[in-house]
Image (cartoon, rainbow, N blue to C red):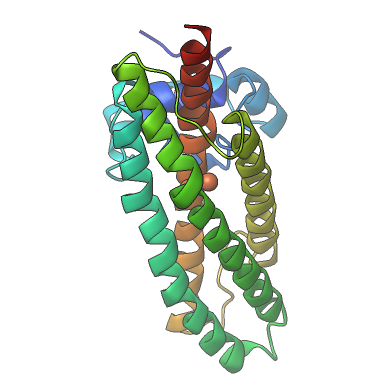
Length: 244
Ligand SMILES: [Fe+2]
Ligand SMILES: [Fe+2]
């Protein structure tokens, strides 16, 4: 069955996990701005929507998924939380540790001829610092609450107590922080001219741009799983528990 192109980009990315990689390649925002119909987004970007739909449905499209082909819509929230922390939070921290010294090295070698590198370095440091705080809040406060909420629902017991009232409060804050991270990534991409290394770039420079682009792609997938799946399911679960 073909893709319903009137469905939102986020819905399609959840239903067909390989679609996320295709959207990423085509520059279609499926995480922070994913709540628009695919047909509308493609029309605005001048992309043939039928070509996108065909690509998602072909085996070649599935090969683009980069291993992230699991359908998380029918997994427990505890499993999804564990996946987000072990895969995306760990990657974000590890790549931050690798890319920051690499950025410093490339700035020191090429910063004079390419002043945009110093700007990228500042923005990436800011992004990393904000993400560190953000992930800590998720891991220490929000995610444990979501796991407890699911456990309570399984036992048909009352929802757990929290210091933040409803789960909608921290979720609202996390979504704002995701938007901010997405905007920093857009600025970095623009300064790096879509991560196109210049003619005179050395290997470190090229490796840096590849790393920054992969970092951005992983962050999009990470935010997509939280904004479009984990958070709405947690809100729905809390509402159901409160109505019992
Ligand atoms: Fe996260
Ligand atoms: Fe997050």
